[in-house]
Length: 312
Image (tube, rainbow, N blue to C red; front, side, top):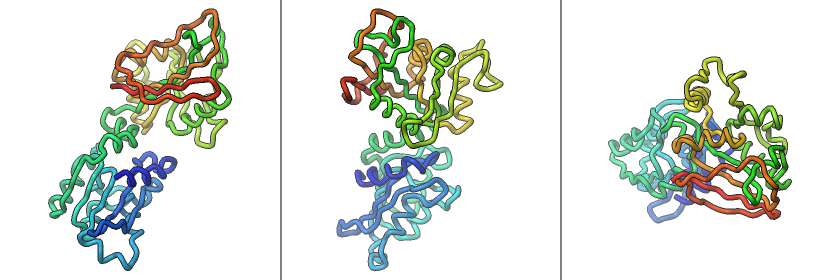
């Protein structure tokens, strides 16, 4: 299953909006005879590519083989035929699944189809890792909103600006890492004050990749015609982004915008907090970390420290 996860990561750029999936086929003697991953949306899934990689000499070994796949095989006709049907036709004896696919047209149906065909199915191997790999896809389908990452940069003494004036706290390298994160995200958001004061471009000019959809929370220029600022805005934003197929959102706004997301524990998933060794005499205080923020990992570059947190 760890090999499935390694393979799946190769689809990070082109599999979207489909999930990243890896598949490995093991013969009865324990030898890997085929492997594949979902390369590009609209093309063959991981299981299809794994079967296609099996040599003619090893074809006979498929009967009695075990297939490992990081996400439940699909059971419906989309752009491609159901992978569950292909697995059944190949005579595979056993299938090991990392996690269930939350997509409404699958959601356990692929597993049930395999079991109905007499195939032994094991579910939940490295489940946390498999769900983590496709956290954006899974959140989008389970919670009907994008996966939300909030980032901010603060001084060593806890401010995000210099006496209410913009200040560069990131280093050239950590700024590049930020643009890498943007390239991996579908949409990016700031509030009205940040937009008017800093005029951020919110693009990926320092990294190779597509620019995220630019969103500004501004009652004078609503993000969609239906937005009603007399009601809570973030749920409306989530509905609008979900309808547009946006699976991930990066919040880069000022303290007020960030606190509005942090105010509801179900409105964010991950935090990226960068701390500079610089200090200032005053300004806007950095947001407070929620009690449910669980430390994930810590990196240090050119004196700046980047800490990642996940919601418990």
